[in-house]
Image (cartoon, rainbow, N blue to C red; front, side, top):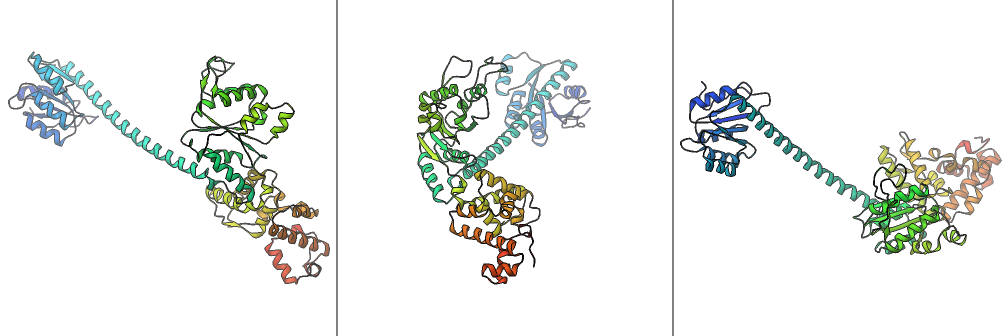
Length: 495
């Protein structure tokens, strides 16, 4: 027989079982029943049991109720305080209900075992107790992992919110031109209110960025900002997207769906290309703006929503109203505050700042080390017409960065053909672009380039071109280098 305090080899699960009884024969019998499958410790007194508990990882303790010194209930009470996760079982040969009730209430025992016990029943009870211990341990681990994940997610959300708010702040909208300063002035005033805003302007002028900025610097920034292009969906699908639908409202509606107005409740909804909506949809939108109510498709119930509406269009809505294609009452509801967003050709002085802004952001994302633009490259960017406006400029910079390789500066040769103006220059069509350039410094640079290219093409060499231009040949060579005029632009050049 193994004496008190003995330990047997570990079981596969590694769970320790502590047996406490002052009768050696009972301890031996319990050991023989459990040892083949489990890691067993034995103790003849409560004091000895608590010493083992402090040193070992005990999953289950089985204590006899009647012992000299500390009773089983008293031992289990201390175990409950020292090792709350340990499963506690009481062994008793007495039908003493008072003791059992006390053990259940104060010692919080998992189960009591009557003497004499059935070996198979004992093994089953022990197995179930250890399963409960393992489950509790796993739940604790999962709870810890979940708490850690939640904290990480909270931190990431705070970081992302900070990123969004910094990107969509007034500092994030690039432009120092007088035209953009007028836009900023209105944005700052309207962002402090809940007024409905109508953004007008050509495609690609950045109306979506302005809408997000108004939201994220305003009082609704803690709530959702959602956007929908009204021209991207047919009328029925757009209605479902904006107002939601009930299950069975139409073919394919297999479940209830919340609309964007519900999702944005308390926040802002951005309705892009509002001029593309049909008359039926215009009526539904008018109801939201007038009454703050929506009705999901297929439902007879209306729901109140508190949503700020910012709309945008590249159409002439006033003309559409005159022609009967757009409701006048909706038009006046939308244009509580109208912000016309100027095209890029009307604020060319913003091109350098925009180009550097996009270059820094895209180069960082793509892992490139581009530090800026050559003077000639910037001249070309500033003199281009940009019919696609800011979006086209951004796409051009992204293309340049993607194809930059190991380059450190963006040169003229890295720009797209239509931006370089190669074909236009060869056809002698640069002059109109110069004439339309409002910035005098940029117009002068463009005119210099045009005159040099034309003179070299007409005379056939640099010496005669310099004489024609009235400048030294050395000065002409320096200007060709500074403006990055390529041989391909000059047909028939001779040294």
